[in-house]
Length: 161
Length: 253
Image (cartoon, rainbow over all chains, first blue to last red; front, side, top):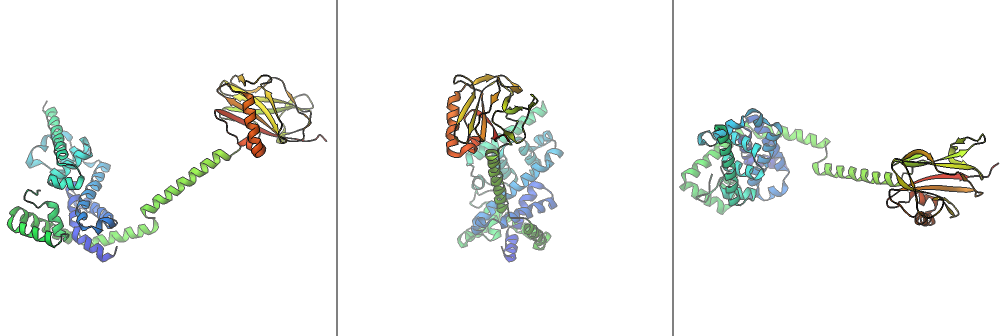
């Protein structure tokens, strides 16, 4: 890829990549490092770049995967956050912090629920958009979200008890 | 969030990135003019883009690209790395197969797979010794010793280059003899070598199950007819451990 093409790509999509990484990682420098990694991957995706309509969905999926891997490898959230505190605060809309939700869901749920929760609560996408990104049907997405909410509820009851 | 009114976040992002075609672009613009929520979201996206490019201009990315290009120059691309790894695995697999199928252990006393045989010969003083190079003379008296870690069934035969074979154990009947676990246990009776001059091979067959010595000897003769003594050494019989010792018989000077 020519440098001019890369610059064009960066100026069009750099902020989208960075935004996704920032939401998950929460730290500007860390997010920019991750965004650079994802951008380099994007530059190598010839088949994605040839179909422009696929670039933004690809960025959502690739950035999420890359940043989740960073979280898993560093165990950052799980080390610094008290899961019980997180469960106690998740239902409070005002305190619904993206990283707290991710810490909880990464610890307690599988890929389907993680994806549904991330795209719904963190990225605030509609079910149709989540379906376009993950291939999960709206019914599955709703089921995953209910599962997540029930697990939060159970955790809270345990804390109260 | 939403596309309750027909336009979603992903579409707005694509609009800001300039991905949409004429018709889609017009539809978004029409909608944004009429929808305050989307109009606000669009302006947030544009602001985010401006701030991002101001804070992290492409020049920052260029230095990273240079480092990556330098690293790529010294390191093969991912797909080639897989190809190299695959090639190394293939070579290792072929090497392992070649090693395990074609390596013939040195002649003499050996225990492999917990079984083995050894030949001792009576010396002039009446004692027993192991003959260097397994060179023997007609009339020599040899003693075969076996080793096995488990109880098993056993036979011993010899084959010479003329195609003649002799089954020594079992000494009578066709069933392999049962032997107990032992290390260097002499077989009953010694063997007096005949007048044949040339190469000869002693073959011991060990098996966990009883077997017919005649059938095994026939299979080994069949192998020998195809490739001589080397074919016997390389022979594989199901459920059997074969051990061979080559000897050379010379005329006594």
